[in-house]
Image 1 (cartoon, helix red, strand yellow):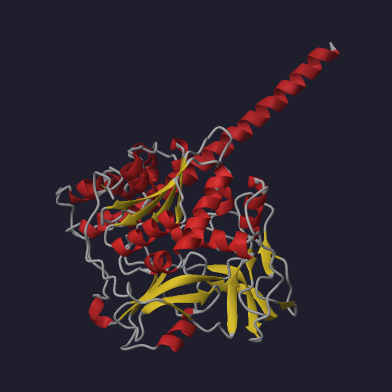
Image 2 (cartoon, rainbow, N blue to C red; image 1 turned 135 degrees about the vertical axis):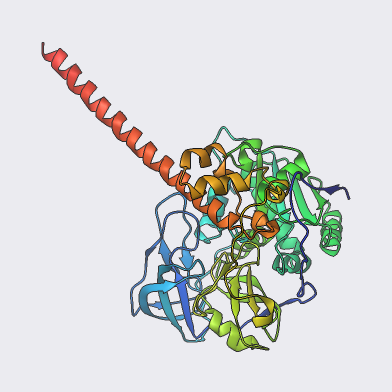
Length: 467
């Protein structure tokens, strides 16, 4: 197998893949499930149930007519006891459906396909949307939207992302080892939907066992249009733009997406969920989660129901020492939590628990930039983080946009390498959000101006006609 990587940039921190050899174990479902109505990028869902309703596993709890959205389903059977705002891993509060589990484990009726023969692509996309599947690598972008590219964007390659470059996390690794056929099936389903000629399974070279597993299964199943490639173990090798550049040598344009160069990238866990939706009829009600860190007594990889409060996970696995830091996701891109009440959502790939010895809990004090250029050399997007940081501190959104702040993938590399502890990632993220907000305001103003101009032209034409 060839070894691919991207350049410039990237770092090689200690991986701490403590749980890579621990197979998935199913955790007991929660007594009280907290299901946020919005667990994806896009429009929020409206509730389809009310307090007092009885729901089964797989019952739709909320949906939206908007294109960029994904419904949410109940992960337990029982009674809806409340619909109220609850804290989510992002730190904000979102309207959520609260369900008291009766532990009867009753499922809704599931409808599945035996094969793809005679099934139209739009039917498959509908199944995937109705199953509520989103990107399980963390971004949680609705999969049905990704599989509905504009007609002018022809897709020739679909990449299964098995890099899993984030520190500590091993849920994708275990998914590849334990469910290789489901990952392959999901890849073939998506290739069928978008008429892609080629499928590529990309695995970091610290997961040779997974790559060999896929090669064996592809050979045994005599699949001709899918190949396995190794990518160099480097952070953030698993970024979409980095994978496309490394494997296909295609540069995604500034502000663009993989589909702009004829590619779709999907996380291996997402592909497994797609296969389960199509061939088993299962909506997304549970997912694999790596629970690791120095403070958890039983680190491992677990199948966890969506809506399980992290407090339940702590009760089930125990703590080996006082919990001082709790992170949803990995340490590079994850979000530190202020409470143990947040539930597992679709985008929760990992939960990290650390004791006091792992971190200096006091805020890091910034020092002046020493112009070492470490952040510039390490940025996988080829940006100039220190200059974007400079622009943001002066609230210069025009300069931030000129420096391409919106191309930042928020990987955290610039902050990681900075010897002065500059809050680069945080400030670049703010600059990015500021530019996006400003552009939306400008677009709205322009649309209003064009509308007013059209109205005036119409009135002028009507007056001319009356003459």
